[in-house]
Image (tube, helix red, strand yellow):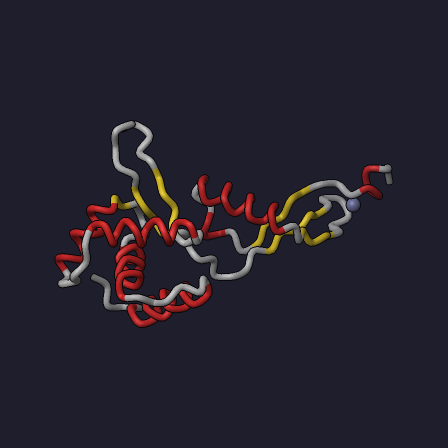
Length: 155
Ligand SMILES: [Zn+2]
């Protein structure tokens, strides 16, 4: 268990729940904290359950499942299915919180003119793509290189 940065992590858990307007019940906080301590890989609900029991938390497997599903519905947790094992259990993982709001802009490679992309759906789609490809951490700013009309019209 990590001691370093623990307070900041706890604060982040509360902040996330507040943002989702979810009451910070002990079950939600325990499950979120367990997920935060294991950011590298997705965990099956049973592992989270055992981890909590080992740290002295009184919780049932059913509650762990319920909280995970609830957090998934609120977009805080993503569920993964092991691709090689069709009978395998689904695993859960915290969707990383971006340190900075994502900024995306179109940039013309010739004249360097820039136009900010503000389409929420597009930004969300980019975020999903980046996450799936393992580019999440560097996603504070994205540039789409694309020639502007003036330059395409010929200089
Ligand atoms: Zn241009």
